[in-house]
Image (tube, rainbow, N blue to C red; front, side, top):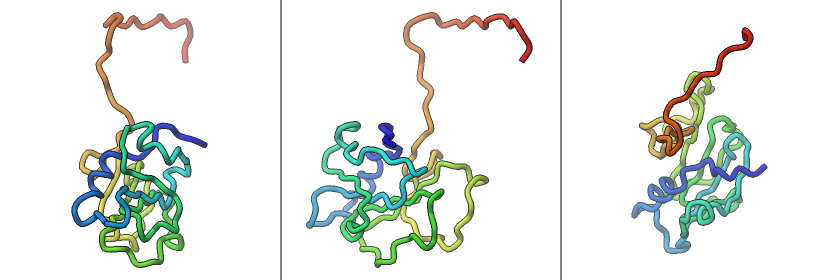
Length: 154
């Protein structure tokens, strides 16, 4: 399944990962490793440039690139303690916790406390905000809406 919406806010993640301590000489591209696909829905890994015109950023789900990835994305709904990286985290690497559910709909993982550097959620106070949608002003057409008459009970 391909999701062209690219669930991740690539611009914000790249900016946060490219801080001085995250830059390596080996690879000029920012590499974001998707450890767990959000909602198990895969999207085009080449969407950085095609959808957002962002160059110098590379998405991958190839876990063998763990040591060179600037960031590793973990989706809360798919986190399993037996599926976390076992290699030592490189000092420049940021781990990103993603959750699109409310806390009341999210099972706690107490063994993951203090493990992540960044958060990405629908909330405005997260490091990387990924809103579900947005409200925009209507352009053109009538500004009033007439509610149709009921012809039956619901």
